[in-house]
Image (tube, rainbow, N blue to C red):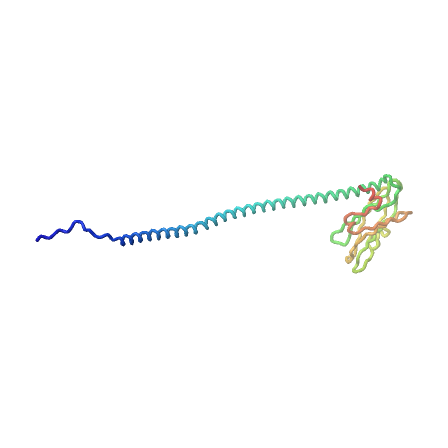
Length: 250
């Protein structure tokens, strides 16, 4: 008996449960890939975003720092300009004050000299100046004497100077003979009609601290004229004006 050839088509029963399993596996794999992709993307976002934010913040802070540096530089330059202007103004004011002081002194001198509407006045110690002699305890003294031009007569006499101060803990006064030249023991002689300037050099003891000058001008045949002023005022060339001079000043 001849053998039967194998059938061309084989009919097998349908496996529904296997199909479901494959579908489930495919779905699970797809879901896992989605989850994994989300995790990866989220990680990348978390990594890149802070870096970008930090970079932007750094750029903003850098710009703010540069702006503040520029503002500080501007303020420093403005302060320097202000300081220079202030020093210049103070120097100018100081010079003007010296000029005004000199003009007032000149005004008092000429007002005293010419007399104006004043009465005939006598001898006056108009100006006193002291200058230290370098590397010594000596001082150069300059005295200016005046009298009212209305008097018209020559005035003669002598000027003596005393110095008050501290020696140790005691207040003492050095008289002219303690300070001046023996050749001028009677004082500095003067003779003038309108004004005269006298010069002398006085020497103080090393342990003596001067505080005041006492000047006595003794005209011949008239009462002595006394003026007292602080040592510091004599160094500055200042002499406290009399009441008449104060009234004459602007």
